[in-house]
Image (cartoon, rainbow, N blue to C red; front, side, top):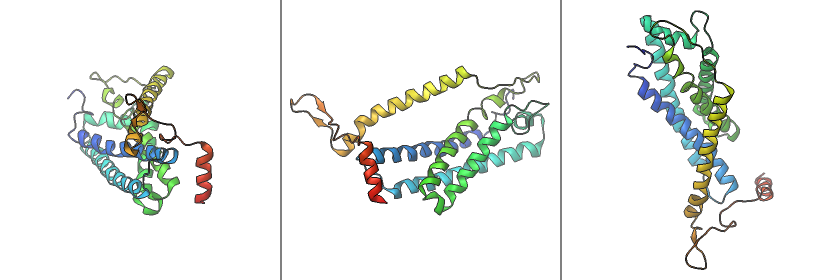
Length: 229
């Protein structure tokens, strides 16, 4: 195949396994923000159960990654070149090595944090694990999946790549747009879930009172934290 790095049957299940890691990790972080700054209640047990499911998905992801690496290095054919370029560098080209090993370290560390109940049910280590997974999978499925498929090219040439400032700004813009859209949807969804989204006094327009929408002040949150301690 012209692109042996992508011509692997294990690629699809790996992609799904990693999605079941990064997606729920983002959910856990968002759930904590929602329950802290709104009246919507989310129990710790639900968050910890999601973290447990992430541990299972991350094990599958790491296992499939190990199986793919073993197969490529054991066969030691010409198709090993993209994998070797990614993890070791090839012919002096090593731009992606630091990226993929950072992603692997983040994912492995997060797996053990979520595997152990004591760290999985600790808010600090739980949040650290979620951030590590989110960043690790983002790197793995970006720099670690797209770029190596093109290197070396069909004629054996090497083209090193590093993201430019403009590309980073574009990525941040995409994330910002997604988060803005998500926030706007929450503005509607949470009052509906709480039963606070109702028709205003004129009987026509919808009404979401600020006191109903749950946006609590910083002082209220601080006072609640002090009482909890």
